[in-house]
Amino acid sequence: MKDSRKEIISWAFYDWANSAFATTVMAAFFPIFFSQYWSYGADSATSTFFLGLGNSIESLIVAVCAPVLGAIADRGSYRKKLLILFAFLGAAMTAALYWVSMGLWPVAMALYIFANIGFSGGNTLYDSLLPSVASERKVDFVSSLGYSLGYIGGGVLFLINVLMYLFPSAFGLADEITAVRVSFLMVGIWWIVFSLPLILFVREPEGERIGIGTAIHDGFGSVRKTLTSLRRLKNTALFLVAYWCYIDGVDTIIRMATDYGTALGFPSSSLIVALLITQFVAFPSALLYSFFGHRIGIRRALLIAIAGYVVIACFGFFMTSVVQFYVLAICIGLFQGGIQALSRSYYARLIPEEQSAQFYGFFNMLGRFAAIIGPLLLGIVTLITGEQRYGILSLIILFVVGGLVLLKVDDSRIDEDLEAFRRG
Image (cartoon, rainbow, N blue to C red; front, side, top):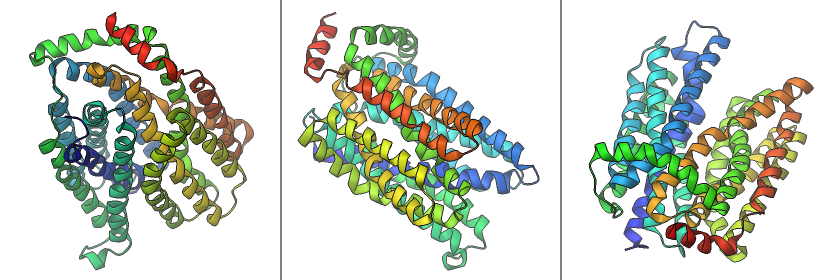
């Protein structure tokens, strides 16, 4: 039965569980620790190259596998089983970073790649459970609840980890290095513990029961069928193009904000504070933006969030002080959770529920490929102009294109298109 309070809360807590990896590991400690500890003795250019190479390998693997993974989950009713597998893979690989010694960057990178695969693969299956947990009436709230809990959960553990790093002796730790290593272990444990509600209380959606071998075979064949389906689901295809553009800009700002702050000469402590501000502002904002979307319409709310990011890019262009950087962090937090949550729930309306894992595989594939154009655009413009400010400003192009394509999505024809699709 959809809209069960127990299932909704249990589903949303998986965001709380795995967001600790996104904040503590991906955004903060792993890049720093990789260059300063595991790559000790190597020059910075070499360290940066291998870090970028590792991220690229992981992104490519996940992007290629996501649609196939979704199709396999749909055909064999394996969504929860595969989600549990990926969650345990990600958590175990993250925790294992605790035991990697100085200089062993190949081992650290291999564990990080597998942890990322667990994180991203799990998210594909987690997203695909949304239509079976929430009805269309509640899907926006439930999606926003997940992102909201993710921001607060990831933020709480990240705050504890930062305090451990700044004041290791207060936590009975020898030094900062030990604090970071223990943080990796804590993220792995946190991930598993808070995945338990979903494992115990969220039902596997009903579907055709077939063997795993048959599901894998059919899953690869379904990818081609999904591409064909998108030709018949015009509004779905238009939304995916729009999403690819504007989420590229969003992800680029998320990934490059601290680098931009460093280029402007802001201290590292200010960058950490800004990241914490974004996390805790995004927590209530994701929920409030869901209510806002219901008042004015989800597509219109997404367009306003896109316009908000245009303002953020312009503000970043003129930014000169740490105080302004904190204001920028608040602005990002106001829109980041909302645009991510409403994009996920709006997409749920545009796809056939019985093939949700397969279609969310494509959705997450675009998410993985999203941060390609933006960083490249930012880098080229920065290289040509010699100013990162113009690189940040160039991201407006992605938001404008995304917004214009989103305007072409016809809300009034969504149900009609899906019904025609089901009839074949």
